[in-house]
Amino acid sequence: MSPLLQLYLMSVGALLIVAWLFQLLGLLGSFGRRIGDALCRAPLLDVALFYFTALPAIIGMILQGWPGLAIGIAAQFTALLIWIALHELTHPNARKGPRIYRTLNGIVGTGANILGVWWTAWAIPTFWALRFTEFFVYPVLTRTVRFPKYKQGEWVNLSRHKFSGLVGYDLIWCLYCDWMTGVWSLGGEMLRNVESFWCPIRFYSDKKCKNCVVDYPDIDDGWVAADGTMEDVTNVLAEKYKKDDKANPWYGHPARLTVEGEEPKARE
Image (cartoon, rainbow, N blue to C red; front, side):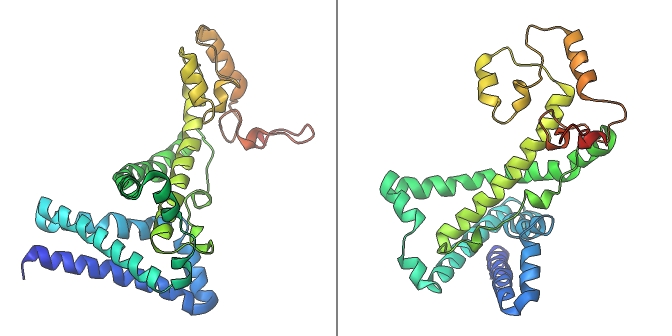
């Protein structure tokens, strides 16, 4: 047996075995549910997803170079397809009922829908890069410039597997979106602090301001006009941030909210 074929079969097997072990957690009662819940929430979720989405390709690259990288990715896709088929076979009623992918196939066409959803797999490395930034880069800013800390597990977690009727193909892609949405939203929240702290100046392009204000509300709630002065900028910074503040969040952050005249939490 060639080394590449051996690597492929071992990778597929390793992925399916661990996926099967995760499925068995439901048979362990409350203990298994606690483990399962922990695995569906950062930071253990990061470990589990890294195992399934990145480790096979990395190991393949280390062992066999570029061909090994391709083998690792192929093993991931193979294991995923096998898992989808087995999961749907073990849930016949849900498999035959209403399905997301069937409905979308009818709207945009089967080929277009399948190509589109699998094409999104290219985004996985991008989200891992963002996750790395959230885990290793942003925490330094909480210590150096007192940006607010976040319980990352409240953002980066999985829960759609609890939705009744999601099986196989539908389930795996809903979990993928579940993860992506949390990672992206947490990154946006962190970047709000960065922008309002270091660069509280509106863009010259009104169109860009309108496009970005949904994700960065401070554009219309505190940032200095594009035709303002540096004195305006420093005045905003002096107003929004104090030397004795325990945290320096973006202007609309919940930590700044007052209740019946009380001081904002960031300044307690």
